[in-house]
Amino acid sequence: MGIFRKGLMSDFNELIIEQIPRLRRYARALVGERARADDLVQDTLERAWSRFHLWQHGSNLRAWLFTVMHNIFVNQYRSSDRGRTTAIDDTIEIAVRDGSDDAMQMRDLHRSLAQLPDDYREVILLVGVEQLTYEEASDVLRVPLGTVMSRLSRARERLHALMSGQAKTLRRVK
Image 1 (cartoon, one colour):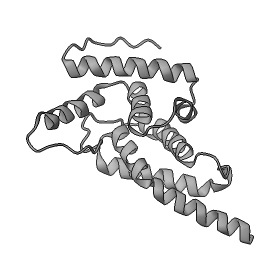
Image 2 (image 1 turned 135 degrees about the vertical axis):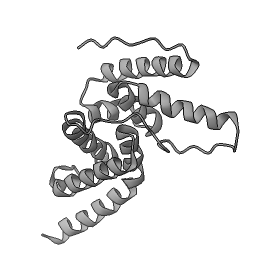
Image 3 (image 1 turned 60 degrees about the vertical axis):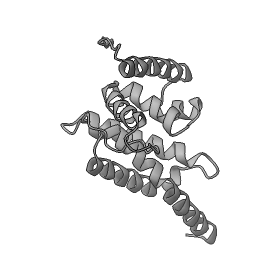
């Protein structure tokens, strides 16, 4: 490996390490429990390092890592008996005053997020929590930009209904 390649790999490692907290937060939101989320992050990091050559230097590493994680999640977790649980504990870390209505709202938000269909939850987490642009979310999820926008709109609407107690059952059309 040449000097340039070694330096690039070193930079790559540092950049990946910076993204681990975001990867853990997203993984926890996807799978709902800490141990499985840690496994998903580990699988993501393993795949990212083994496929370092596929990352284009100068491109958005965070979006690339989320794409890797999303693909692993789709391949391993959705199609297996390890499907997500509805318990989301400490997924979104927001400062909350002790004993306040905010604490109850956060608990309700966690429960409501867990009730969203995976497609809605993924887009709302990527755009709302991880602050990816619509274009980046489109790349991560490998869906058209318009699909991201419509899923996000529906996810926000459904989340609002769940939070306000006005939720109706969703009929899924495939």
